[in-house]
Length: 114
Length: 110
Image (cartoon, one colour):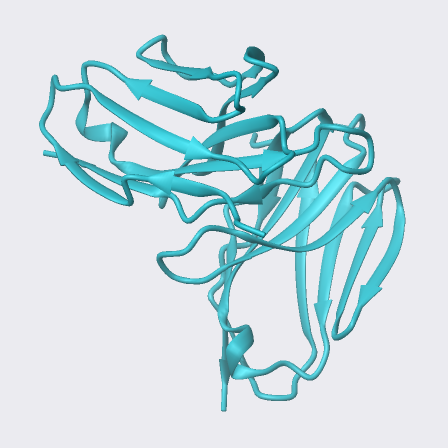
């Protein structure tokens, strides 16, 4: 069974640019969550999508956005990149049911902003 | 104050030792608790999942949740060098919106 797949794994951008990250969940998982991981702040929740609708949102500025497609694949976008956006962006999928909402993470996309 | 607090370590133990990792949380509404292990340059990997209070055991790993004191623990018996990683605790009450501790870096010396 394939795990959560994130692309690209590594990318370098400059300030002011935008970036789009992609996530393919485990087959059958309809919930996709995104987290930002930095050494200083640890793992912080960005947002969650289920059935193409954003269900939960963390405390991040509007420059961070996402979407989910009908096949449950998800993308997140960060516009007007800042140096502080350098981080590991993790995608996690789950069934989103009581007792079965365990998050399975992908390997992450490591973004460096110069 | 962060929703979930975790001592960052690092924690260094000899092979075969019992390891105790701990977290505290502030929101009494949290019902779902998880422990993840993360190796360098990899995504977090689920170790244990607990709903509400109580203990759960899986092989060398035991997770404990004490909701009265808002305390989460993970015990590793007979620790191995391959257990060297960062351990993350997480808690949540809403579907899939989880709060993570900052992670404890564990080093098991052969």
